[in-house]
Length: 223
Ligand SMILES: Nc1ncnc2c1ncn2[C@@H]1O[C@H](COP(=O)(O)OP(=O)(O)OP(=O)(O)O)[C@@H](O)[C@H]1O
Image 1 (tube, rainbow, N blue to C red):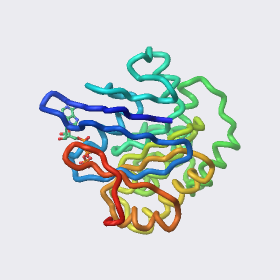
Image 2: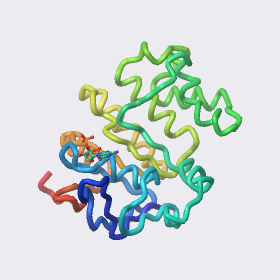
Image 3: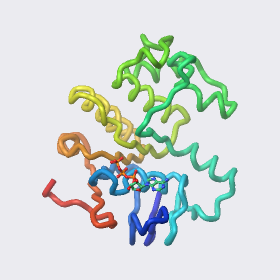
């Protein structure tokens, strides 16, 4: 699905990520962990072609990102759902319209029943008409997940999706992500919450990647 081959990234102040080679196989579930500032968000941006590597190759759905034109990038992004660290909504639009926004923007028809099914799945059907400023942190994160999957992506990348949530809500979100994985989606979750990763191991066969000294390595049983 997504492959990194000897990838490096440098914002200009020296290499942040070096010699990164890994593969996110179809249907796999990965966590990416590492200290604040280690480069987790940067890695995700490379994985959805928001950034181009400064060395090496990133291949998304068998295409080298360097060869992608603007339209190809747009098409590629439709197959990748991203839950951003700072979830942004249009505050004047109700929750349901915010979740459906990717469909609206791409000019695709939205089936109101599918939208309500999706909101029900994330437990937000009763809040379909609520405006974003009235939502709690957990509700916002679940709405962000719903919006990330409304286009039916093959891959879901989530950046600290449980960052500000209590344990119960974190587990709820984790459960949604593992359900998506069981449906065949390829998932990568960046998090520094090691308890969440430990908990996930009882739910899903996840691999844990760790950024250390600019490299990304597979974490062992020492988590
Ligand atoms: N656009 C940018 N220009 C220059 N430096 C940047 C830019 N974006 C990020 N950085 C720097 O790159 C480093 C890694 O940032 P990144 O956001 O990828 O880390 P992270 O592991 O996701 O951190 P956190 O867990 O705090 O979100 C940080 O030192 C950050 O300040």
